[in-house]
Length: 353
Image (cartoon, rainbow, N blue to C red; front, side, top):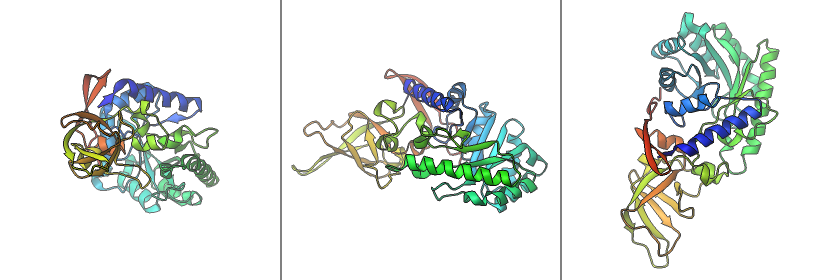
């Protein structure tokens, strides 16, 4: 369920905060995958959208979004090249690259359409996933240029900000990496027009920035991870999962009460960082914890003696990682004041290529 009033407040608040810092906002739509939410983000001032795959780009281009960044080092195939060529006829498309091989293959695969596609070189700013060291961006950019692609600048993802005590340090490392990579590209003769960074935990920390734009995604909904990182409050949670108590678990008299709800890993997703206190939270019962998941069962440990909800009782669950949960749903209930007002299709669900 999406509370549309909270959703709109989250969208407006991030848009205003980023604009006040003199940055562009390019939200990551892999979080929501819903054209109606994308339209709200664009209306609030977003310069375009970030996506993770060509498939997601196709969904949002068909919905009218004309500026899309595929923030991923796409390894191009004949089919993917044809899809990118088609996309570039109706939208401004930028693609991530982080290797000489990937940039060369992308340009050669696109052929005469290569000049319609821009690239950003991905930089590792401390997350140690994809991306090159800031000092190593020039060879990748030069390969892209030789292949006929337009080199627009650099980007990074400070994913290590998703841990207790890390957002401030991750934001510092992000800015340092973007700044140095930009200097290296400029020295190599490239005009750097875009320095793209920012995750939900760091986006609000970006001031006097080396970045020109930020790409937060989770901020539209919030989730249990952001709640525990203190990057959002309970009142900022826009998406919850409606779940039903289906079984009571026999527990010792001196042990915590436990019961089962019908929202397992195939509803909530199974992501649980080592530091997280559970597999999700109950929005109306902050002391309860989801302590175990299987595919269709979630075990709730209940901290309020004598008040365990009856079988059949409905509860609202905050997923740990909302991006996984939304990708498991065909559509969502849109509510206002507790009343159903609409249903939205998760149109980019499963568009993972």
